[in-house]
Length: 300
Image: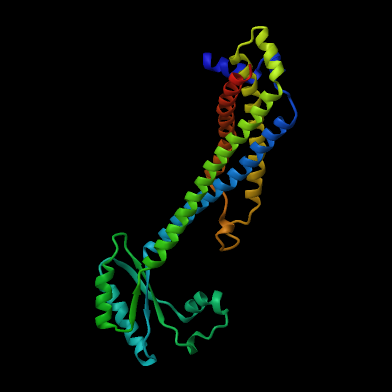
């Protein structure tokens, strides 16, 4: 019960002590604006981190259990080599299924670069075979050696060289998002500290009078901590709400294939931005508390 009473007392405050801190002014507006702006940016940094994480998982899972065999052979040998490769894959442990892509499927793969009317049948385009492996996987190096011996025109691409750089890039992007959140938190604390110092300096004479009548530094500091904490909480709540609305207004991943259209939250992750206002209040509490006691030692 005692922590609850202390929390309620902190929220209600002391009207006499609250007079020390101006309810408006440059310091008050700066605190609210800084908290709102930093919370708005934190929402986007959080969305970037979560989206990059989903992207890394999607790329990793999509490419991890699939591979492709390309057959570059003369027209009179292509059908025979294709069948030979399919027979080899059917006998390879770890291969779940394998099938040759049709001309229509290969045309669809090339359409984004060359257009939908590409005459696949008249161009020297390799025959592609889609390979889906089991959970255990197959021996890629052994399969390459067998293909080289029995189907010289076949080349196995297990997507490793594509998957690793993509996943690494997505992981670094996620780390960048979390680093941005850390920098935003530190910047919020620094700006609130500056605002609190300005308010303390502006009320140096009032603080001196309070000390003359017996007020202790803890009593005076509590008023500053309470006001700046509530201002930060209010500003962060406004910035978080605006940031969530902005993220919600972005195009969804289903409407386009670009990564940026997938930037946002999904499912329960929409609850994560709600932790930003309490976090801003905690940062403001400790930043103002440290600044208040440090400044009160200097104001004599």
